[in-house]
Amino acid sequence: MKTLILFRHGKSDWEADNGEDHDRPVSERGVSAARTQGRLLKLAAQEPDSVVTSSAVRARKTVELAMEAGKWGSKLRITRALYEATPFIVLEEVRAEPDTTRKLLLVGHEPTWSELTSLLIGGGVVRFPTACMVRIDFEVESWKSVDYGRGALIWIVPPKLFTQGKFDFTD
Figure 1 (spheres, rainbow, N blue to C red):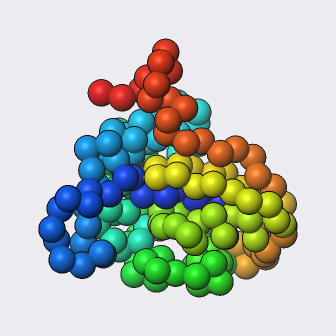
Figure 2 (tube, one colour):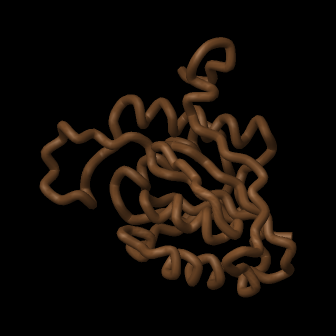
Protein backbone atom coordinates (compact mmCIF):
# COMPACT_ATOMS: atom_id res chain seq x y z
CA MET A 1 0.00 0.00 0.00
CA LYS A 2 1.08 3.59 -0.73
CA THR A 3 -0.07 6.61 1.25
CA LEU A 4 -0.22 10.11 -0.21
CA ILE A 5 -0.71 13.16 2.01
CA LEU A 6 -1.51 16.43 0.27
CA PHE A 7 -0.70 19.52 2.36
CA ARG A 8 -1.78 22.97 1.24
CA HIS A 9 0.59 25.77 2.23
CA GLY A 10 -0.27 27.92 5.24
CA LYS A 11 -2.13 31.21 4.90
CA SER A 12 0.02 33.62 2.93
CA ASP A 13 0.81 37.19 3.86
CA TRP A 14 -0.93 39.35 1.27
CA GLU A 15 0.45 42.49 2.94
CA ALA A 16 4.05 41.56 2.15
CA ASP A 17 5.30 43.33 -0.94
CA ASN A 18 7.66 40.74 -2.37
CA GLY A 19 6.81 41.40 -5.99
CA GLU A 20 6.07 37.98 -7.41
CA ASP A 21 3.37 35.53 -6.26
CA HIS A 22 6.05 32.84 -6.01
CA ASP A 23 7.86 34.87 -3.33
CA ARG A 24 4.88 35.61 -1.07
CA PRO A 25 5.62 34.56 2.56
CA VAL A 26 3.46 32.79 5.13
CA SER A 27 1.39 34.93 7.52
CA GLU A 28 1.55 34.56 11.31
CA ARG A 29 -1.67 32.52 11.15
CA GLY A 30 -0.05 30.31 8.51
CA VAL A 31 3.04 29.81 10.69
CA SER A 32 0.90 28.69 13.61
CA ALA A 33 -1.18 26.33 11.45
CA ALA A 34 1.93 24.77 9.86
CA ARG A 35 3.41 24.03 13.28
CA THR A 36 0.11 22.59 14.49
CA GLN A 37 -0.15 20.27 11.50
CA GLY A 38 3.47 19.15 11.90
CA ARG A 39 2.96 18.21 15.55
CA LEU A 40 -0.33 16.55 14.74
CA LEU A 41 1.23 14.25 12.13
CA LYS A 42 3.90 13.25 14.63
CA LEU A 43 1.38 12.60 17.44
CA ALA A 44 -0.75 10.52 15.06
CA ALA A 45 2.31 8.55 13.83
CA GLN A 46 1.60 9.81 10.29
CA GLU A 47 4.89 11.54 9.48
CA PRO A 48 5.99 10.91 5.90
CA ASP A 49 9.04 9.05 4.63
CA SER A 50 9.51 11.61 1.89
CA VAL A 51 8.34 15.20 1.31
CA VAL A 52 8.18 17.06 -2.00
CA THR A 53 7.27 20.74 -1.89
CA SER A 54 6.52 23.49 -4.33
CA SER A 55 9.38 25.95 -4.60
CA ALA A 56 7.06 28.85 -3.68
CA VAL A 57 8.24 30.57 -0.48
CA ARG A 58 4.95 29.98 1.36
CA ALA A 59 4.96 26.25 0.55
CA ARG A 60 8.62 25.74 1.49
CA LYS A 61 8.22 27.66 4.75
CA THR A 62 5.03 25.76 5.63
CA VAL A 63 6.71 22.39 5.35
CA GLU A 64 9.92 23.53 7.05
CA LEU A 65 7.86 24.73 10.04
CA ALA A 66 5.81 21.52 10.10
CA MET A 67 8.90 19.32 9.91
CA GLU A 68 10.62 21.27 12.68
CA ALA A 69 7.57 21.30 14.98
CA GLY A 70 6.85 17.61 14.40
CA LYS A 71 10.51 16.58 14.44
CA TRP A 72 10.05 14.55 11.25
CA GLY A 73 13.10 12.81 9.84
CA SER A 74 11.73 12.91 6.30
CA LYS A 75 13.73 13.48 3.13
CA LEU A 76 12.83 16.85 1.59
CA ARG A 77 12.88 17.78 -2.08
CA ILE A 78 11.94 21.20 -3.48
CA THR A 79 10.64 21.49 -7.04
CA ARG A 80 9.23 24.24 -9.22
CA ALA A 81 7.05 21.55 -10.87
CA LEU A 82 4.47 21.76 -8.06
CA TYR A 83 4.07 25.55 -8.42
CA GLU A 84 1.13 26.36 -10.73
CA ALA A 85 0.91 22.64 -11.52
CA THR A 86 -2.02 20.81 -13.06
CA PRO A 87 -3.30 17.58 -11.49
CA PHE A 88 -1.61 15.69 -14.36
CA ILE A 89 1.79 17.21 -13.54
CA VAL A 90 1.37 16.37 -9.85
CA LEU A 91 0.41 12.80 -10.73
CA GLU A 92 3.62 12.51 -12.75
CA GLU A 93 5.60 13.70 -9.69
CA VAL A 94 3.87 11.05 -7.58
CA ARG A 95 4.59 8.31 -10.12
CA ALA A 96 8.29 9.30 -10.15
CA GLU A 97 8.65 8.66 -6.41
CA PRO A 98 10.92 5.69 -5.53
CA ASP A 99 8.97 2.64 -4.36
CA THR A 100 10.98 2.54 -1.14
CA THR A 101 8.77 5.46 -0.02
CA ARG A 102 5.62 4.20 1.68
CA LYS A 103 4.19 7.55 2.80
CA LEU A 104 4.67 10.59 0.55
CA LEU A 105 3.69 14.15 1.49
CA LEU A 106 3.32 16.81 -1.19
CA VAL A 107 3.05 20.52 -0.36
CA GLY A 108 1.33 22.73 -2.89
CA HIS A 109 -1.49 24.98 -3.92
CA GLU A 110 -5.12 25.49 -4.81
CA PRO A 111 -7.05 24.87 -6.93
CA THR A 112 -4.81 21.93 -7.86
CA TRP A 113 -5.05 20.12 -4.50
CA SER A 114 -8.89 20.09 -4.54
CA GLU A 115 -9.02 19.00 -8.17
CA LEU A 116 -6.37 16.32 -7.70
CA THR A 117 -8.02 14.92 -4.58
CA SER A 118 -11.35 14.63 -6.37
CA LEU A 119 -9.73 12.90 -9.35
CA LEU A 120 -7.73 10.47 -7.21
CA ILE A 121 -10.73 9.36 -5.15
CA GLY A 122 -13.05 9.10 -8.13
CA GLY A 123 -15.19 12.22 -7.73
CA GLY A 124 -16.86 14.52 -5.29
CA VAL A 125 -16.14 18.05 -4.20
CA VAL A 126 -13.27 18.58 -1.78
CA ARG A 127 -12.69 21.89 0.01
CA PHE A 128 -9.03 22.50 0.74
CA PRO A 129 -8.49 25.48 3.10
CA THR A 130 -4.99 26.77 3.80
CA ALA A 131 -2.77 24.38 5.82
CA CYS A 132 -5.27 21.55 5.35
CA MET A 133 -4.01 17.99 4.95
CA VAL A 134 -5.68 15.11 3.12
CA ARG A 135 -4.61 11.47 3.29
CA ILE A 136 -5.34 9.19 0.34
CA ASP A 137 -4.36 5.50 0.35
CA PHE A 138 -3.73 3.37 -2.73
CA GLU A 139 -3.78 -0.44 -2.75
CA VAL A 140 -0.73 -0.60 -5.03
CA GLU A 141 2.87 -1.75 -4.65
CA SER A 142 4.39 0.91 -6.88
CA TRP A 143 3.88 4.66 -7.16
CA LYS A 144 3.80 4.13 -10.92
CA SER A 145 0.42 2.40 -10.42
CA VAL A 146 -1.23 5.37 -8.71
CA ASP A 147 -4.02 6.67 -10.93
CA TYR A 148 -7.24 8.63 -10.93
CA GLY A 149 -10.13 6.86 -9.22
CA ARG A 150 -7.89 4.34 -7.40
CA GLY A 151 -7.46 6.20 -4.11
CA ALA A 152 -9.39 5.91 -0.86
CA LEU A 153 -9.88 9.10 1.14
CA ILE A 154 -8.80 8.28 4.70
CA TRP A 155 -8.98 11.69 6.38
CA ILE A 156 -9.18 15.44 5.86
CA VAL A 157 -7.67 17.57 8.63
CA PRO A 158 -8.10 21.34 8.48
CA PRO A 159 -5.91 23.11 11.05
CA LYS A 160 -8.94 24.90 12.53
CA LEU A 161 -9.98 21.58 14.02
CA PHE A 162 -6.99 21.73 16.37
CA THR A 163 -6.46 25.46 16.90
CA GLN A 164 -9.78 26.21 18.56
CA GLY A 165 -10.82 25.05 22.01
CA LYS A 166 -9.41 22.14 23.99
CA PHE A 167 -7.39 20.57 21.15
CA ASP A 168 -4.98 23.49 20.87
CA PHE A 169 -1.53 22.27 19.72
CA THR A 170 -0.18 25.75 18.99
CA ASP A 171 2.73 27.40 20.81
